[in-house]
Image (cartoon, rainbow, N blue to C red; front, side, top):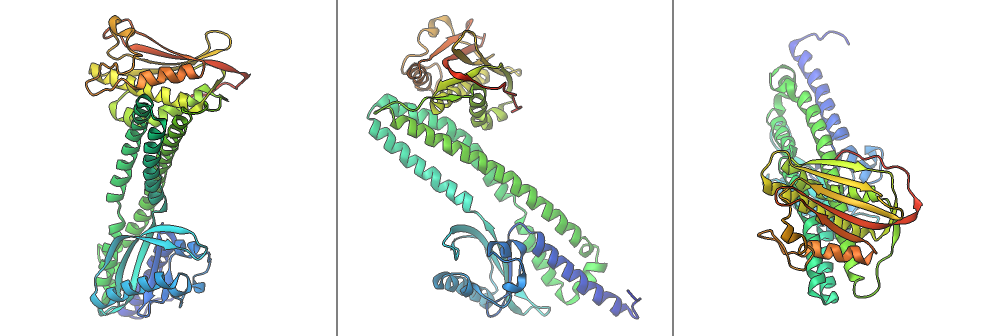
Length: 435
């Protein structure tokens, strides 16, 4: 590039070029759907994510078009009304949830932010904004609501107080993990740096008349590219973290569905027995309890031996193991000791049988309570109901198994052993993964 002939020449071309680089970087890499429109609500620039969502690869396929070309008349009119109000009043729309019906009929949800687009003199020349896809969040909310309805229906159909309280107890265990995950999601969304883009847009608008000089010579302005790169990394990592949390929530929701389905079979025929890897079930139960266990500095030790598959109902075994792990956690908490431990074991002590063991170093069980622990309604917890262990013992019997407990007494911890029949087909050794 040839040397500039004057000071003004040295600033303006560089500023224009940097302007284009900044805008292109945001449009290309931002993890949400960005758009810029003129006063007639026609697209003048769109981000990569919006292009992909519409099925395009080249921005020229959307430039000059409007929402009328892609959505229903009602939906396009609603969007146009909002944007005309923004251009007329200069107000903004931040974090508005909206239902979107795409041309292929897919129903999705987005969280939209829209702002006025101003020229160098501050005159509004259009609108710009972005939309975050929150479809999974909405679907999860609906799924939870459906599960609650299914739970009520299942309890009513069962017609037995013992079954109903067993369902509520076990679903309540899983809901604790869901509550932790939803809190993590809510906290992540509240702490999102999406608002930083709004501030950046306002900052660039404020310096529109001398944007080139501001970005190249001003101390704060020179930090804009670095800030955009940092913001892009933050959004990418935040999106990964929240998606993992949503996946964990979905797994717990699926477990609730399994529990409800399992209880619905009580009034008719038993559920299907199938060969299952005992260590995998133990890990699944541990993951369903990890939200609570992780907050209490509880050490979890795994001791998985190579054993045959068990012949059992997956949902019932999960129900039992979740109950036992949660009870062990509470028993450890009550001691107040710093070295709280729960040991999970899988082993085969005799041919044709497999043991799934949950052992803790908690408060233990006095001898006089060992015979009562499986009775309906018996509990030593101030806020307990005595349904979890009782229903777990019943579930073990229905699978031709047993649930036993051993404790040396108060302060000596407790060991619960779920003994189940083995399947004929053996499984390969299981490598325990860290929690």
